[in-house]
Length: 108
Image (cartoon, rainbow, N blue to C red; front, side, top):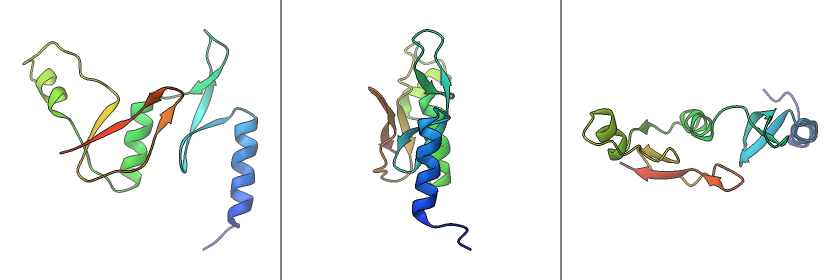
């Protein structure tokens, strides 16, 4: 069931972006925005990893912990794993980023 055409949806998204209600973090991936009390800029309300995990699950990609996360959780190391690397079950070409922060994928 098509409620509206593509152009109308894109106009609505652009209007929300202009009002700083949402931020685009990837192709077809938008998130709510909040104003940073430090810089005054608008930033994603959630952290980038949580946004990426939600988007991947909606795309049918299984998210798994990478080896560094497993070792840290099992207390085999004190090295904190990089939060910008996400373990997935298949190849992902979707770029999710905000400014210089970019999510990378490790196929397990």
